[in-house]
Length: 231
Image (cartoon, rainbow, N blue to C red; front, side, top):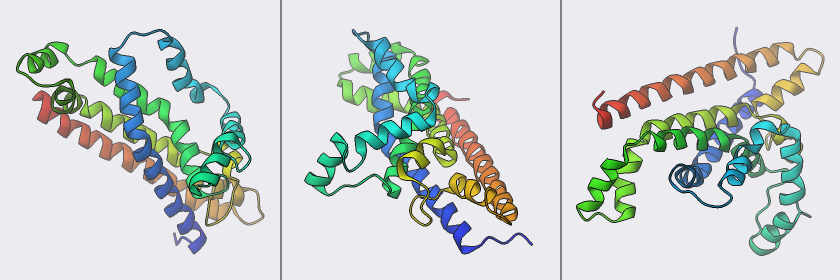
């Protein structure tokens, strides 16, 4: 009988919380960077684009180590946040969300950027000629038309965050109940005697969650397309 243990449920719930927080926190930054890369030409654009996509080509362990030396208790950013605001990322679930957000950010930005680039700028120009401010044009024309890409980017980011392992375990370790996500739990169970059954159950859960996210994404994307593009 397929029955999850309390520890397995904890890992699943923690993974969902981390993936959701990582996606929602990364979203406004992703929209801003995607719009900047899609609509503006400036010195250093290629460099910014490269930095944004760097987590895709770097080994996840390298990204996790960079986060550790930057946001750890003794790191320049981590020590400042701890001393000034009492915020701690290292070896906390919030640090896992940070690592997942960094790893998922390139996928989020790329999907939204492609959606921005596909929008006919004449529609934005028409709204501007009617007296709409740039911010209102963005909020009422650009962003709604880009909504399918935003949703697709969010789901890709959520799925990436849900399955992230290398950067997370390097930055925040594998602490049950605090930083042990589904991926980390599978790794743990796969390396202990008699843990194959638990690892198999979590693998099935990961597959189901990923498929569900993709199906929901497709449904929302189709709904947005029908609303804003008349498809």
